[in-house]
Image (cartoon, rainbow over all chains, first blue to last red; front, side, top):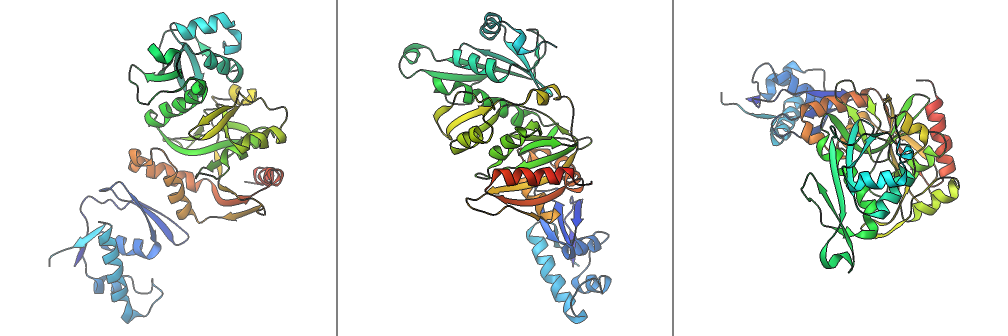
Length: 90
Length: 305
């Protein structure tokens, strides 16, 4: 399970499939692709795992449905490196 | 309003040596004190159109540039800068006093004026549309800026673009355009009537000369402009003139990298920069010929919004 790091408001601006996102905790700004922003928004209401996120975002990504959980898991790992998401104990 | 040109030289010298010359540059009021004749000469030549206020009263910035005392009065004389009694920089050779004055005038704004998002960029206006030229080193920003003002563009600033946080308007701070090394002769050739200050040699940036801003730009210093274009220029010898759109998210990141206080402003800076990107078009620009660059920017400013 993953959750948005508490304190992150996820303020972002998106243009043409790319986005910039303000990191409330570091004060930095990140350049992200639109897919990463979709994952963050889907995770905002409540913690979820990659399979649940893949179900919620089915059809929004240009990859096979059975590959989507792994793709999202990779994205979550990248977002965790930016302190935007973190593992959430079940 | 009284301008610096209205002050007899004796009065100008007396204010500079005594209570301070109170000079208005865009939204800022500066109290300037100095005993350096070279600085007085530079002010008289390049700032004669600027409004001045009576001595006393409020000033945003108080700057003092004075000759070093003791042995340094005769041996390799130096100039010291202090702001409100604090000396944040080492002294410089006395003959660099005017260049130091310009640097510290910029420094005061970029380190204090946090009610604006301040981008390290030239900004000019034509037909009601502002052109922002952010400035990675070696970009040729100041050369372009100087050339554009000699071709009728209104100068808002050669060095810093002030974005008002409340509404995204660009506030002018027109001051002399700083030209370096080879750019000095380029502009002398391009605009023989342009007024340049005395070149200052052997600075950390090489030889510097300042171009006097057009009088109209000073008179309109209280008139904000609306952003229309953000163009990242790159001078390359022999390069063909080219203008290519830049994706907005990438332009956002590049402008943030060129801002003096984006990090200081936090979320307010993010919001202001997002609006700036929304309300303008962004491009990468390569050039080697100034005349072609002028024609291209004229077309850009004239095109329908």
